[in-house]
Amino acid sequence: MIMSEPVPIVDSNTPGGMLEGDLVKHARRGDLEAYDELVKRYQQRIYATVYHMTSNHEDANDIAQDAFIKAYSALKSFKGGSTFYTWLYRIAVNKTINFLKQRKNKHHFSLNDLDFNTENNPDLVALISDKTPVREVGLTELQKKLNEALMKLSEPHRMVVVLHDVQGQSHEEIAEIMNCNIGTVRSRLFYARQQLQGYLSEYAKLA
Amino acid sequence: MNQNEQNFDALKKLLQLKQHEVPPPGYFNHFSGQVVSRIRAGEASYSQSMTEKLQAEAPWLVSIFRIFETRPGLIGTFATSLCLLLVGVVVFAERSEHASKNLIAISEPTAPTGNAVASLSATPLVAAIDNSNSGIVASTNPVTSLQPTATLFGQSGGSTLFQPAGFMATGH
Image (cartoon, rainbow over all chains, first blue to last red; front, side, top):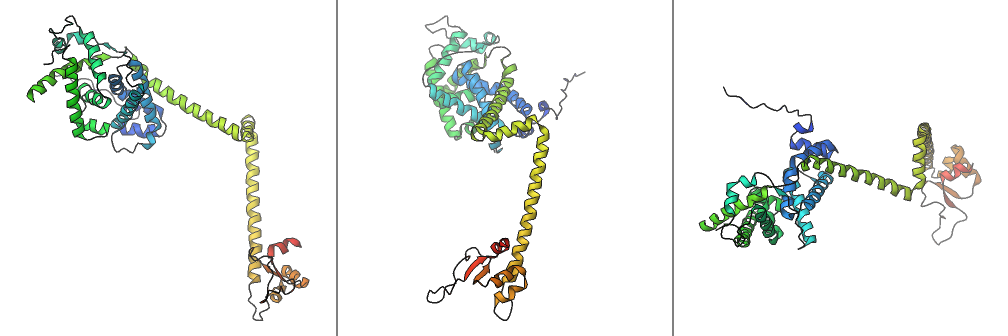
């Protein structure tokens, strides 16, 4: 006998049960409950993107919140030419790049802790180089080196790597978010990967 | 190229490490609440700044609003008197419009005799003009009002002037 999973009861009248388009319509009329639901749906992805760009939890918190507030105030100008998600992402990306330009090269790392599953990930453990001069390097050290290497990339190159290789976005989505063509996304990704490989080859088995 | 792709595969695996970087537990439980609170605070400060602006530019208006807040009965009285004033203005405007239309209709030269002023003497208003015999011609055109009717060589031809009809009506 096959037991099916219990289907959650979705009430389309509550913000939690509404489609994205309906939530956007309600939020445009000033319904903050609807906007709260939109924030809940995208907060993790927006925060993660900003965090991976800044390598700083506090900055990511501020920028992500600012992006959501800016999006709410600009909702009336949202024409629906793209999805709300893409439009929101664009706001967050622009805010992040502006922030990084102001901050320039002053990097203050405030890295989040690795979760408990990291040490059980054989792919990651296997990457720790046995040829490195820092033989005892652990995953935490590797995390730090990885973030340092990412911060050496220019903002557009870092953004492409974060969106594609960390967040799993497609080339098309990235092109729409960054307002450039797909060829540019591909070339930036290739160049950024080459750069990262050069920076990290000493610490990880990448070749 | 294949070698590069293989190398990049290893790099991509390494980049997965970033996915394991997570914010403190419970962080997202409060995130949306903080965003909404900041939006509400922003809206409140905006309305407050609007009130402050109004206070600076028109303090009398703000004091009127405050009086209305403390005495709601005054709002009804104020609204009623405003309505009455509006109705009064409309009635007055209609009456004056009727009067001016009558004068326009009368002042048009319809009589075959060609003497417009003589034909107007049927109404009491224009009778006054006729009786005064001062050479003033009634007209509703403000541009031509009080213009001397010059002759061909600049002679004024006595004291003949154009004058708005309304002026005459209020005069007597």
